[in-house]
Length: 332
Image (cartoon, rainbow, N blue to C red):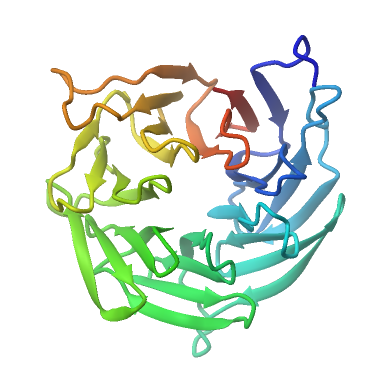
């Protein structure tokens, strides 16, 4: 793309409210994203769109879309930068589904993974994370208090754990064998698949029973993770020193909905929420925070409450945000 043409922001207008979204990780599909609808009925949609780098525009309509039962709670492309595996996409909602992207406009469901064989009812899945080292491994979190680790190649459960006392809202891998989760019980817990009988509580909400909604594990420095509390602050945790956060990020003026660590820097993070703000933080000074706490180094105001935010792993200059019917990608 010519330097003169290259804008800082590109916008795609979907035909419905956008909730889930994520970037393709493949080097050959750098500006491809998937997004999911939030419609309060059974039939929802997922679209796959690609920015045309010549014209500098997203398509007016997605060439590739498919129907999805209920809104997706999360979407991820397989974290396969080297393109060694099939071009896969995963979604959660009522179940974990793996989809194969056949070409520009065809997607086929590869597997529907359901561990609840005994009942016609299912416990909705709140989130999932794809293991970057063992690509066959996907972990899901559920409102039934469990986390389930799937082997998607064998299409079977590797491990299912009762992870918390209440609903589990998010899950994140911190390595090939280690994952963490957050819950309505207000705790962050770390699990090691080599020792399934034990978990470590890294943090508990200061006010009892305040749910923790989202979790991000710092891929560049796995000593750090961050969690979103329901009563607003984002807490940054050092797993070597449990119970006390190393920083509390308090600049949002309304609920925080989403966070993402920078894929290329151990000290940068982005948060976004109902105040329509996406804030980028430099946490390199968090061990000696300035008086009055840390302030963001960059702020972007969207047109409405931001539901979702993702930082591109292959292009660390780009962040995507979703608000109302819009998906925007921002150059940072």
